[in-house]
Image 1 (cartoon, rainbow, N blue to C red):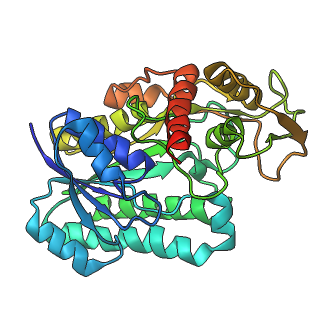
Image 2 (image 1 turned 90 degrees about the horizontal axis):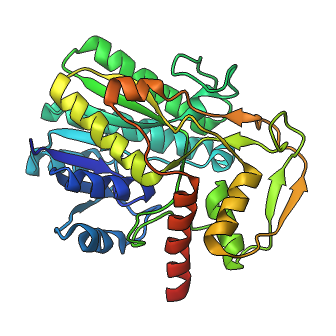
Image 3 (image 1 turned 180 degrees about the horizontal axis):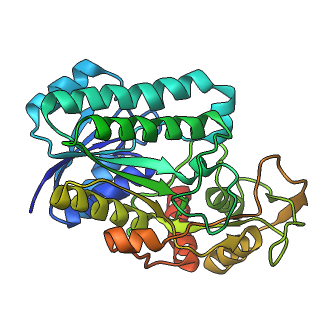
Length: 337
């Protein structure tokens, strides 16, 4: 069954891949994006991948008037909400901006949806809500722990949605807690393109492979892991996008909400990621062991069985595919620079 889906932040990294997956699944998609953290060439690239015209509304999710006009013009059946700020370190320096965009934007969006009678939402959350978890792999039942403003905004967003569903059973929300998205679309037309020095490991490794940065800093090699470096659960962005389609279709078919981790349940260390990227590029990637960072945990891995049970979701792509697709994407960008 074809539905019309609004993607807020749909020109961004995860949003653009989800656009491709939704179109492939037969849905009509409308993108809302202010291009604060997305390239303006993305809609054209999406048209090349899908062979279909992109419907784009340029605007800010905090703008109630823009949202009212959008919902009046397009008969939206459900929303996938990506539009948010997402850098942990930046959130420590700019907490008010994160509260404004991540909490204020969600509140404005929910009001517009409610006014339009559109009450199906897939919410982009994060494993950051777990803070430093007590157990690994980490289940969805782990307690909330706010370690930074970004994580607090995701916790607050989830709590808002919980209260909303309790107040009005017409609402059905899928909350997806991501672990570490990585990789790029197989076409190499869309991928992660951070504007500044990357916050995440794989795009940082990619810039070292390109020669744009001198080395990878490995923060600690004395953790209780196989090689002493931190272990994280990396999920290919195409798998992640497919998880959003399954979440959305579950909401539309059952009208029941859910909360699931989206990860592989398999962790890779920092050194394993560097080694995999070296295999993908056939280049040496220098790294330097430095001191641990405050707040880092040894192992951060999803317990992934609930996604299987609730959504029928299983990942299909491994670390080598993440690295190969990332390299294909970033080396293509470098060639066009």
